[in-house]
Image (cartoon, protein in one colour):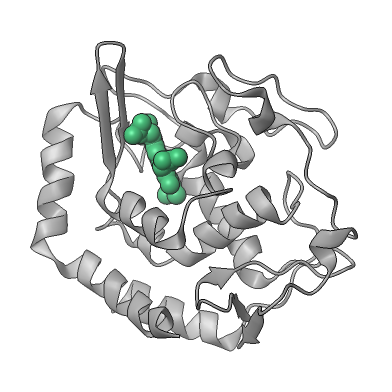
Length: 234
Ligand code: HEC
């Protein structure tokens, strides 16, 4: 409950706060992340370049991509129960408020109906993910040799941790590693849709959401239109 009110505030703070700007700036001076996020599709920059493989179209349904080197095979295995199985059953304590679903703890979450219809935010997150994140994290959240599988991460990662990492970024530098998770705290194309991204990835990690553009979705809720206008316009 509490979180719900806090999210827009957190986003507004992130977008307006000088400290986030400086975090992003400090990282940019450091190891030069591959010109994210505008570079989606071109993947340039000296130093680390996201693998070209990440730009390939997602594998056709039923045809799994070979796991990238270093990825646990489990990350790419289609082991989730299909929608129609237990994933489709109404989940304990999940409530629907204006087309957005929440766990009993007040965290945003996905909804997949018995006929495979996904909630708006899962659908929106699918699109946002493939605009902003897939160039490093691979199509469908399956990971690449550059960045970890978020389908794997979201099996255990808390919502609050997800927010923190995406807002502030993360640096992982050692002898063999210079991979950078950019700070997105000042990027409205990410921060205004941060719940959508989380919800989509959670649906992939826990809800058995199959790869590919969800065929059936709920209509865009009025609340989503209002929140988007307020976040992008204000
Ligand atoms: C420029 C490449 C790049 C882009 C673009 C990028 N990431 Fe990352 N991300 C990384 C790398 C590299 C790591 C691993 C950092 C580390 O090892 O600490 C990472 C880590 C993460 C983690 C932590 C995973 C874990 O298991 O701890 C999350 C969550 C995450 N990214 C979310 C996102 C989201 C959401 C987007 C899109 C808005 C995104 N990333 C875009 C490179 C990227």
